[in-house]
Image 1 (spheres, rainbow, N blue to C red):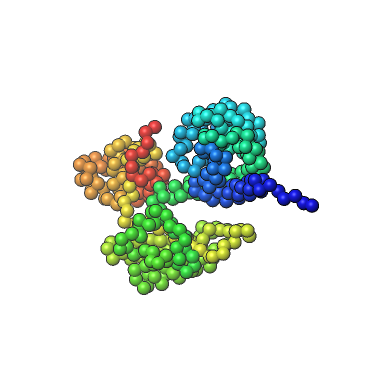
Image 2 (spheres, one colour):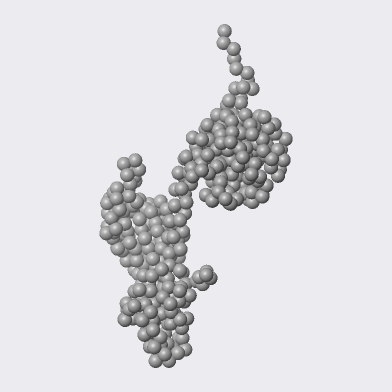
Length: 365
């Protein structure tokens, strides 16, 4: 006759299975693993559970703290005994000394010879029970960590790309073939605010006039149809949307959506809309021009005004110098930048790294 498993044992197994499920599901939590860490602490009767991810520079204490409440990270970091944590064998759980009293930690391996520790601390929990549970979770944690690294790397790349686009003053939208908006960055949202020629209505990209709307939708549909497994820089449609409030139209470049491979073939065809406001000034920084081209402050101030579309006489008046002085400064700028015409100078300045500085005071070196 088979003997039924004790109720307590069955409950423990169910809770452990629940924790393992949360460990996988928690990869998409924000903050990551918040549900798993909260439930792990509750299961053990501890004050908190968290992870310590060792930084890439192993000689420093620059570690990431993964906790359900990011506000606790600084407090936790201040109470870590890293010497004791680094002395633990890999895939081994044991009691460790921490600022908040008793604690248990499990050390696992990341790539590049780095470590990650799963730690339970605080409260009247039973260390023996916690250590046993951590040991049982060790194998599952080892299977999840490669996914964590892949997702972390992808998230870092996404944030870098997002930051570069935002800081360049470029608006971007990802839309379906029918014009439904999937994502839009902050710059594009700002350019589409108010009563401009481009806006989002009921989740779809829209233009103010019927002809502009037709042109926009046809270009989106065509570019979405041409989405393929490789990027083609020459594949795009330029679109200008008249703006009744300003002389300059809002200009767009519409390209096929991101390239895809056999595994990531898109379920929906998409197009990317890139937009910039031509009415915005160049906003070149005087300090940037000084550093990049060796200009004097006076020469850099003149160059920024020329890049913003002012003529030499107009710039001289605005700067409070004579026309001869401005001409002399311009000749010096030509010599230092290697050009000999004002039009070439403007093109050089607007295509240089200075155009990405935003016109604000750059950091001191």
